[in-house]
Length: 125
Image (cartoon, rainbow, N blue to C red; front, side, top):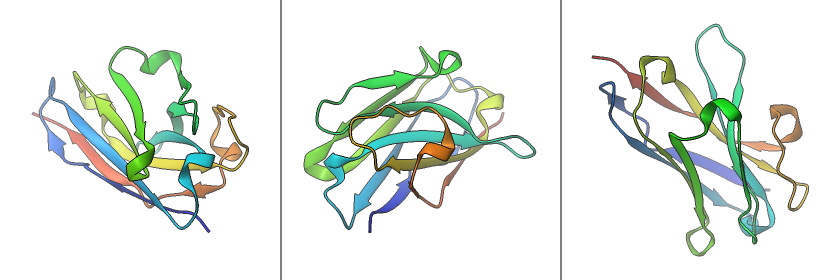
């Protein structure tokens, strides 16, 4: 059973940066594609980016291109989300998730099998 734990969420001012981490344990994590999602109060969960396991191919939702970068370090079983030029509308709980279909770059939450508990990001002056 794969477990995911997010960390790195914080309160930052507009224009700031954060780097979120998603640590995996319990199974060979490089088998799984990992995606980052976020959910703001009263809104649906939306996809940000995903990265495949060994080949580390990436996909970004169009609205997230340019300010967000997903990377992974398989030696540390960790996937990262670098977020720059943060805006108040980026305020949300950020989740990572693992897709059990190898090498797929899934874009919707329903395609993911394992989820972390989330980490809060607040962007406010």
